[in-house]
Amino acid sequence: MNLGKLGINGMILIGILVSISSILVSVMSMVNGTHTNEENGETTNYKTTWRLINAILRTISLLMIVGIWVSVTFINKTSVLSTDFTWRLIIGTTIFLNLASAVLNWVNLFVSWGKGPGVHIARIIIETLNICIGLIQFWSYCTKFMANAKQQGVTDVMNKNPMYKWPMEFLHGKNLKTTTSALENTKRNMQATATAQATVQATQEASQKSSPNKDFGKRQRRRNPPKKRKKKQLI
Picture 1 (cartoon, rainbow, N blue to C red):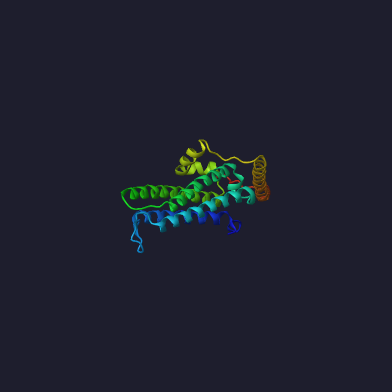
Picture 2 (cartoon, one colour; picture 1 turned 45 degrees about the horizontal axis):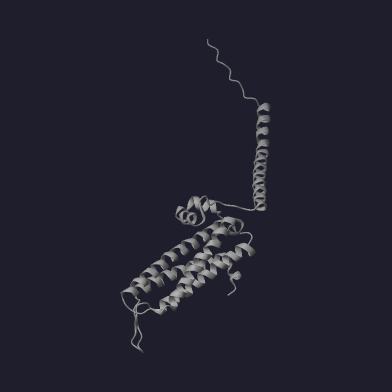
């Protein structure tokens, strides 16, 4: 799969779908975990099918976040996820969460689970952890999608999204804010200056267009002064 052709938004959307699918698979694994082998009659309390699907989904999610990091670091230079260095930091750290989740599920796949109450408890703990990770991944992908679509820096997102701010500050430290290169700051200052100059110029042009009408009115009043009313003489 050529991840570059998907674009940042394409990879983020795939990550969102994979996160939702993984959560649903974990729920199904907790509800329907018992499986009996018809050939030898052996019973397991942790179905291989659900474990395999979850391992594949977690691997896809890992590939998507790696693809996003590569894109914002080396390919795409216009997205806010690229120009904001703090977004790069967050995306890079998210790779480790996805990697740990994928490794956990592949290890879980190759564990030979049997039957008994201990297996039920282990399955519930593992799948509950999978659901929590899936929710974090879903929220993380959605936040990046909105930030990329609206070109929002980390500072804007942290101020407007406290539910995302807390876990990010827990992972990266407090006072997360937008950081950009000196070149990017220069570009933004130049754009702001150009915008201000254009606004002033437009205001001056509008003022010049309205001034002839005012002058014409003054000239008319000078040529045709208002007639004074004659006072009536009292008899």
